Image: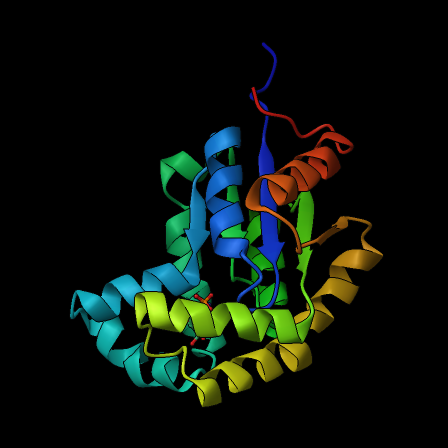
Length: 199
Ligand code: AMP
């Protein structure tokens, strides 16, 4: 029997890079679940759960939720049956500690990431898009001050994970400026070069 095709992916980019939107498109086309830690935290905050209460202030400030707690959330999610043959991670790992957690977890399953999609968008463009989103969606962490804080964290803590994955030869850097469709096609062209294609 031929094993089922798998795609274990990560999408990385600064806030406002469009990674959430592109992540949903990739997940749909490849038939893999999208695991967005930001979405999980926001849903728990909105739902008034215990996890939501623990993370609310941290998320509102734009700081990172502690690694152990975030990694536990991801491990629980990836243990669900729908993630057995692939997934797209959005927003996790976000620092080197989380990379180590994810490596350990995946190694325990005999797995590793197949590709990391880096959506590259200049900082000024990210800020402009986030201001627009603040007007449209009213997210509590899209204020000017918190936006700057989140972009600083991206540059200082998250960007270094791309060096680690880059040394493994699995990073595809995608120009994140263009129409949504253009960017989606760039991503799928890069994935196709790794033999990751829709069924
Ligand atoms: P996002 O929607 O990915 O920008 O995430 C929104 C917020 O959720 C972040 O600013 C953090 O407070 C929190 N968060 C999301 N993912 C992570 C993560 N991997 N590690 C720590 N905190 C996270």
